[in-house]
Image 1: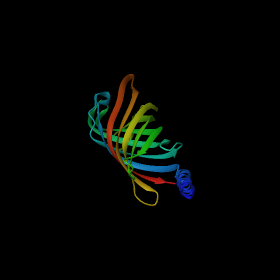
Image 2 (image 1 turned 120 degrees about the horizontal axis):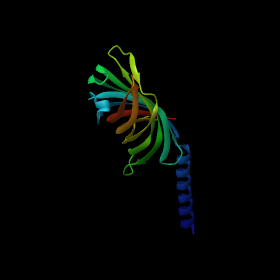
Image 3 (image 1 turned 90 degrees about the horizontal axis):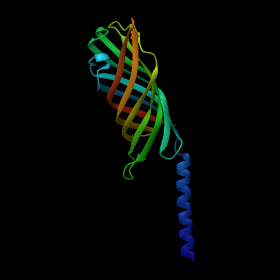
Image 4 (image 1 turned 45 degrees about the vertical axis):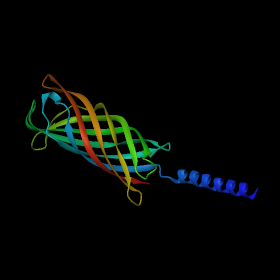
Length: 195
């Protein structure tokens, strides 16, 4: 009888500790990530040089492994020759939002994550002086990403991974309509602060 009571008490304590740990786990986080990008197509027939960018976003976890994110991002590609002239930069900027699933790997502190979401972005064409010469206006696109979440200390995590962005916008300039289908693959590294 005593053994049964002791085992019941131990199980109850362990289950209570698990529930408390889940309740006190952080639900909010802020992430800053930077990336190096390669275009996977030629928007408007233009070959783009490798690019770079960054994103800032807030995360909210509403289930144990599932959450939402929203933020803002910027990515820039240069071109030597384009339909708009020589030495034109293609800059994609705007908003991002979506769902994230994050799960531990092999009972370890490391986790993997996958993201799928939308973009509300536009593409600006800039000359070598940094002046905007054309703008597509904002429109919807999509983003998918995956990576590894590595805990550091004091609520900080390192998140290396990859992402793919797709944004199709039309540019109307001087009565000419040009399709700018900007697709690119990025290797990214991020820092997350949980709070």
